[in-house]
Length: 104
Image (cartoon, rainbow, N blue to C red; front, side):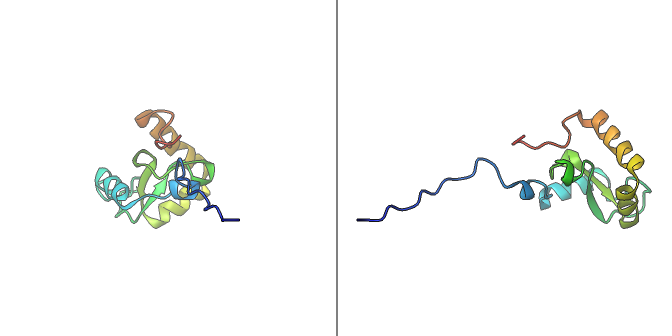
């Protein structure tokens, strides 16, 4: 009996883990928008932060990225009030679906 090859279906959307990552183009745009400065303390920005955390479904999109220095990034992750402040800022700026991508 001849073997039938396994069908090779393409995914409708990228895996969830990949959708949460910022690509290089998005990182560059976020740094440019924020003038490469930490938006919390205005020192030199060192990384892009997910305003709505990946663990809560935040995607690696331009409208979910925020330039921060390392110390402010740690502070935001440890302070729920500060996290919620930035979420409110981005909801006002980009709307309630600011953290979603094209597949949501």
